[in-house]
Length: 186
Image 1 (cartoon, one colour):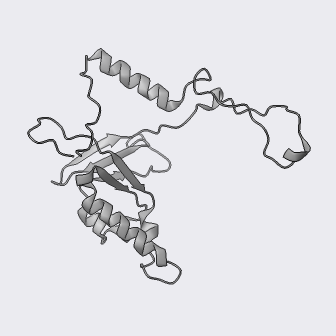
Image 2 (cartoon, helix red, strand yellow; image 1 turned 60 degrees about the vertical axis):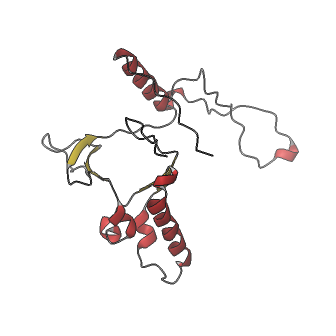
Image 3 (tube, rainbow, N blue to C red; image 1 turned 120 degrees about the horizontal axis):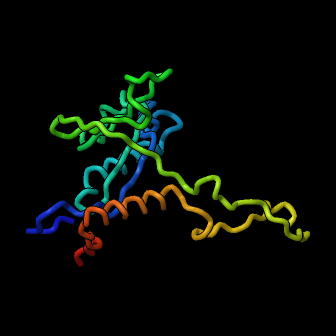
């Protein structure tokens, strides 16, 4: 929601819709036998891309086959494009490292970047170990009982480590704390 007369960056989106493998929805052609629902899904995604920005809803669509999606309304209306570089096998010192990519801006500029992957609980700290419990006849066939995973005290997650590193970095440069999102106007 744009703030009238406010200086600074626009507020973060309130909702991001992620459509993975968008190319699978558009090829083979919409309306082909066995794909009647794909057309309505694509139209809904196009509506999010077209009208969602003013409502704080943004769309991220991925495609492993851009040749299948380049003629779609989503591709034509995309403001930013991210291309991840596929690693060359075997890698050489002159080739980009895994996670490298390029961000294409609407004005044609290209910004190279190094991406990373944030996952869940670090395997060596996971506590989903089987537990011995009495088995009642009524529970025969249930999945094995496991110890509950407590978020605190069982080791960090990659996300927790990343958040902690970002917090330390912000404190080291005396970064200003951002206010919470403003509520929607009534």
